Image (cartoon, rainbow, N blue to C red; front, top):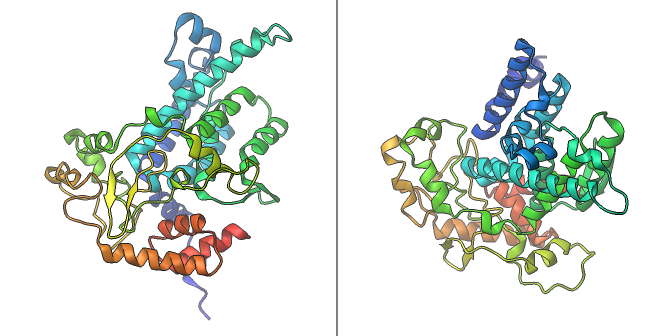
Length: 386
């Protein structure tokens, strides 16, 4: 009997399928980091003290370039390999939700805020009058892992899961996931920058709590970037995800839009309670047949998912039409609209999931991630409960 064709696929075929499903910015950042490491390896460059993040050099000589060069350089093959294998699934998930340009801006913001947290903590600890630890300001750190830790915090908050698996060995509460990883890496690996990873976690929580909302541009900013003629070749690529070409079923839910009054801090509504206290940035809204929802600038849920069909716009639109897609409330391109029937369908499927016993917020996230397919949404929800 002929075996299943899926089992016959070679490693190269599977790798090609995996890589082809990776969105534009995620794959681009991965290739850039890999190429930089390869070039350094070929030319024998190892003067990392010139490009690493060094708090004393940044503060005393204002070498701001270190904030960004340190993120792209890696010290060893295992370093770059492990970081990129961790980054690809995280970047893919967030890019499909946010869009390519928005994710690129997010990584730039996280790299900047990580450096600020790193500087502040390093100097506070180094010059505190009780027990100064002066070596922290002269600690040289490189690698993308600080941004990755921020993305772990953001993705965990967005997913709505209650537990996360640690290397497939045991489950931990989702709110402690990043902190447990921080501790484990300090014990399991050598030459790990505790302060670099800690700064990433702090930036991630600051972002999810809405503290960076006033640093986030509105949809028109991303639309203008996507409409630049010089970027038309990138926008037309299959892996490029438009920030304004979102799923026809509307926005992903965000916790800041809940109206539940905070009653306690340590419970399953912890994130909702904290977010309700944070300032929210006003953005454009979508008028549906029943309600008018406000877009959350942190988790917009407007990215066009890959390989989607139906009324969703295609990324291969001619460059002459790139600007026209931003005229309809900055939400969809001119050749596609969100219909009331689709919104009603989404609401009906959501009610069915809630009736099956699933928590409403998680059901909304799963249903939106599944492009409105209730069967796929159920699989996502069941996997989160395992």
